[in-house]
Image (cartoon, rainbow, N blue to C red; front, top):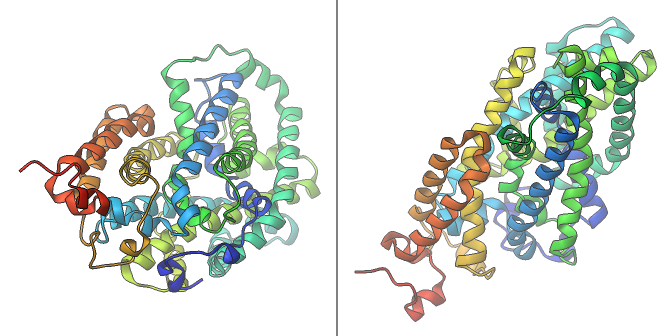
Length: 449
């Protein structure tokens, strides 16, 4: 993967490397997030087990639909997110969605790398007597950066091999937790009253919010999917890959934390598995799952953003993303008292991601009616030069509404941002040149003088 991939106007079908099975495996391997475990842990005392399962199902359905919707531009035209966003934010303005997408990715990269390093360190301490988590954190970071440099060819190889292992390990861990903590789970979760009110809908957003970053840049992935895969099949792929991983990890998180009060996943799994051999396998699974998730979700997207913003090569961008992850102090994020903080973090960045998602969707489906003039997306001096202030203002309006309803921030931002963008594109004079050229030639929706 080089700079040429970002600026290539099209990704022809014969060059696309993902068939439906590979694409499903990539998403399955990329969605085994320890963040899901932590979100589940944070719901102890709020929801019962049935409500958690329904919340996860709703969240994953929203994710699948949203990914398919926003990924159509990339799938149809072969363009990445940074190019797709040029019509709604401008050549200079698309730095905003890039920044908003990159910051949580880098934080999650650091968080999940520390968890993976902790798993490797525990294996090392038990088998070889070598206990040094800092060493494993640094080594794990460089391993992920090295694999990321191979781009989607490397991702396809890693994810396809790992997905079968991941599914088996998730089932095993789920059964182990039930066997060890079944009585406490029955008392604390199954028999608990819970609520179907605002906290329940907030939980659906938390489980969805873990993947809200990917909803923004899904075109970076869908442009590699073969064009014969239709939109309904794409929804099925997204939902069926994300749901199993999210369901198992979220349920394991809330079940173990309700029984023990512990939210550190390494400590949880170490206590849930009695057999030393199986413990090693489980810990290696945790490390491997973080590797697959980070490569797909937390390295490639911000690397694309750095390529577009600073003109760096993909190799240099991937290395820089890995180095920035060191600055997130991930060892602070895995502490027991950090679960509520991570939930707040998800709510906060979702408040910024939701409006941008709405703007991009309205731009593609309503303003441009799914018809893009690709040449303008690659013409830095053309109609999309500079900043499209309609996208900026609409995003700001959406953020205000999202922060007013922080518990459901992503949901609350969609209509205000999308409607504002549509109206601004119709009536804001500064947005006139960003409208489709056929509208300008016909004089349709001309701004009032």
